[in-house]
Image (cartoon, rainbow, N blue to C red; front, side, top):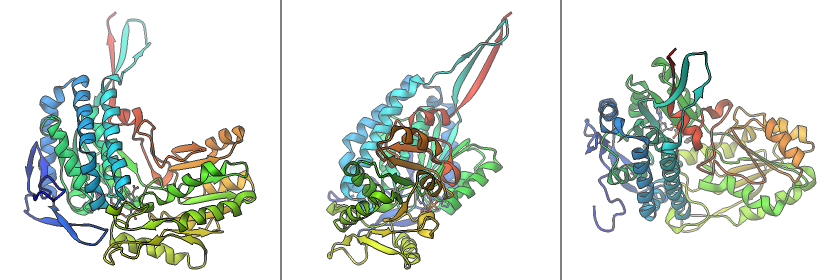
Length: 485
Ligand code: NDP
């Protein structure tokens, strides 16, 4: 690599059993910079044979030094990885900006979040306790939390670092050995993370990384009989394929499949506090966020004011190359731009309240799209029900609390929701009524907080990652009942 090349490692290799090796087929895939359509580098096109080698290497790690480590020792290594991630944060941010099109500030925030996951989980490693259970006379009964074994991790392109932190970080902490298949469109920070983990002293085989195409490497991973748990983040159709493959091996899965997350703004809301959250939760990462708040439900008394103020905020959004660190970068790819443009076409019958602006000098080959705010959208319109995964938000007016809940709960998804109101009783009432895995009151987290359990209901998926729940999810409970008379 040249001195000016921000990629400090060979990106064409897979990490298997502590060694960096090419895909057995020798084939590679191009990685494209969505800011200008240029080729960044080649990555390995891993396939079934590489996945098989990675699973075997992971199993060998489980049977070897890694499997024998104490929780304290594992925790120290994970914590050390977090410290190194902080040292590398600026370089990781550049990689993510190039690869995903994320403005530098957002990319750096993801690197810091990855470090936080490692710090949180590293510190928690020796604090996951079993229980003693009162039982019949003459017995002592207790539970042990044990690793599943070899865990498979399929990570999408929108938040590679954060999703690796929350799933791989937790799995390693509990003593599993991981095989990671990053997204073919964004895998530089996954490879960089693996280099950092090795530098921090993670034993060979504890983490294996096989880049490749979903239908090849991904499908081989989910079908492999040596995998004992699968964590998947991505689309609903692919999640169904993953769960089906896992069912054939009777293996547990965690699915995080996106959403159509609403924010409910009531007449008594503090609008000054709400406004930045309303807009940012839809525009962060160009709306390509599983927990993006793509629906803003507003009570009639403040509807016009919210519409006006959100429109002003939208008009001020500038979109351009990730390295220029504007408010918004390009979408991940021309393909994603096409998907989102298709949704915009479905909104031809709607009123556009405001759009942001793509800077004039943005390269024509970049995947740029103006962020768009639609107003007065009926709750049953396609744009109000389907996940768009782009910088598009809809404003939906409502009259009563009951109506707001009915609209909020009317999609197939249930990931995140928020309530903006000063009425404490309403806050508590709605926190229970809203179909969502996370409910925020007078704030919006977009899955924020490594400490906070996260996951969905309905088609948003099942299982929880983040917080201590992830550590429970990446382990299995063994009950020991000892009869001693
Ligand atoms: P996918 O769900 O297809 O991809 C997510 C991950 O799954 C990628 O690593 C992908 O590999 C892998 N994958 C693809 N097919 C298989 C398979 N048969 N078996 C195992 N793994 C597989 O999403 P896309 O990238 O195609 O994006 C399409 C839509 O999905 C978006 O518009 C958005 O709506 C949604 N999405 C949701 C995300 C979320 O955070 N919930 C994240 C990303 C997308 P690869 O891409 O490398 O080939």
